[in-house]
Image (cartoon, rainbow, N blue to C red; front, side, top):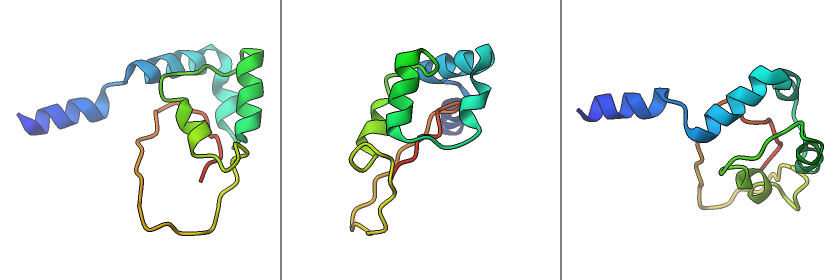
Amino acid sequence: MEREKLAEQLTNLTEGERELKKAWQNGGQDLLKSGMTYTQYQAYVQEGRCIQTADSHYYRDMSEEYLGNTVMEVEERIHMTRHERYGYPVLHN
């Protein structure tokens, strides 16, 4: 039973992923071809080219000064986040 539940969680799209997939199917493929900074992402949202989902705060929270710069320092704690399928390639730390 646990194996079936895990398989379902891994294969079924979340609500946010369904929204992102719909945006991708409606012409958003070009936005997934290269990385963008958080500032670019914000501009695309304002232009209506990108959508926001319940997990979009991750882009803001994981970007150094909201610019998407990757820091080379290593912290002692590790934070894991499952990226949404069809999510935008926002550069993050």
